[in-house]
Length: 490
Image 1 (cartoon, rainbow, N blue to C red):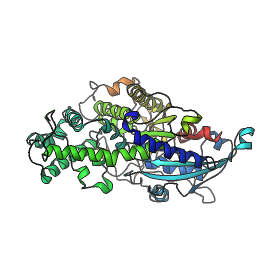
Image 2 (cartoon, helix red, strand yellow; image 1 turned 60 degrees about the vertical axis):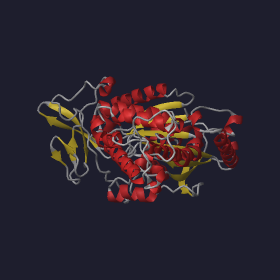
Image 3 (cartoon, rainbow, N blue to C red; image 1 turned 180 degrees about the vertical axis):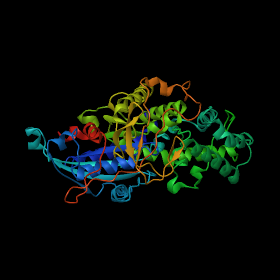
Image 4 (cartoon, rainbow, N blue to C red; image 1 turned 180 degrees about the horizontal axis):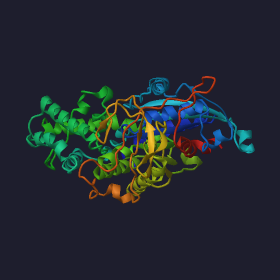
């Protein structure tokens, strides 16, 4: 699908940008790593933990370059793109380490350059390599990726699909107010700013309701309606789908003509530049998935998450080029799909979590007709907020996780205060992966799902006898690093 998102002019600009970047890379090798995921998947935490562990020599036994002692040092440098906001690493680490609060979620695109000085494992490479790699980490909301398919859809297509999704059983009650308002308006009436505003606000409220924990839905374009940034209130965000559109061209000056014009402006001025200036420049990609939130919400949320991952993967440019094609076009040759918050489960369930996400990713890869890149799956926690233990319940010994639940989290009727450390048995993920996607599977009492997870505060960091704070603890961050950048440090 990515090939249909650009024009010949776009491709020419991409080629010039790529050629310029390749020329600079001859003297200063760099790798652009995209980090994305839907809201609350842990993008900010992942980047902060990755940088913190590399700078502070964290425990990364599966990251070969670190394990073998070949990394001399890692340090932050000025990023190459002056027009892109800097990822505020220092603020995010301070929130994690000092305040024990999770940093603010990604609301817009940001970037950070981490330079790694290393010694190659190959004598031949040591002769010709500078032993220095600049890792440009690009953080962007996954919701923005879900806008890219709009580039190939007319306003009528967008309206029809949005109405069909809004009428699904899992969404119908949330969208009822907006659908009632839209059905009462004739698209052929004269354009009116207040009518457009009421429709846009009703549509946005429905999308926001879909994001709440109770539904945890993922496929919610347009993404900027949820994260408007500096576009809040602009005409480019003041439109909404309309029902029962006629196939003929709208009457000039009508509400439909206004909505269609603003929809096209959104694609031209918001979606297309994002794709051309950022997505087409990536070399590697990690897609973070909060499967826990979807599992809590049930099979309908899992099916919607699968749809979102399919659309996200379809937006990338996968594959491997050759020396000539690589001069003019970047391809993403490795993509890691990571199930985050594995620390919310006992390690005995990690394989099951990974199997669930692998099933989701494999189906998404097949449906997106996605080929040419290495795709891997991992269950991980960029920052481990819990430790493991066991408790006795009668004659049975249960594996539990121990941590401090966030204030207001609830389980089994108990509400946590955000201060008390608690041992929790989160339940076991099902052995059969298909059951979490099956709407016929419900909780035994018809109430909350049988599997419930709570969110925890960041951990208290350990200190050495000399008072030095150790690096952020994690689960399989080293495995993720090895897959994403290990070959460039060989």
